[in-house]
Length: 132
Image 1 (spheres, one colour):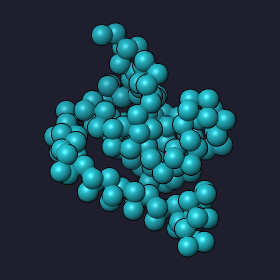
Image 2 (cartoon, helix red, strand yellow):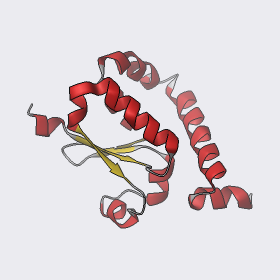
Image 3 (cartoon, helix red, strand yellow):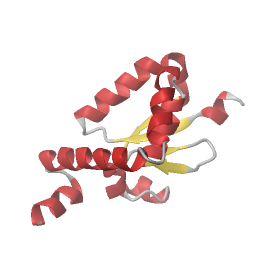
């Protein structure tokens, strides 16, 4: 496989300090392999996301990546692909992909994201949460 065939694009929330820290952490762990990962800040990119069939609201609440073949993965599937690229994180990728672990991890992930967006007062999610 060529380097181009291994490239992925990660859609991340550049307005989220934790997301930026997570990106930097990943880049440090990835080393040279990180050059095959392009990072795209989704802030004010709703139209672009829609052209890729990514719901802008979901892009805020779930990590999305695009593989070299243009397949878009989200949530834990996206994290698993990213983690499998770093030998140190491969065991974590395996663990969170286990059928009896995955739903639990997904629930924790969504709760954490919901708290973050609510605390920042951002997006439709924050509005929906305030209305409840």
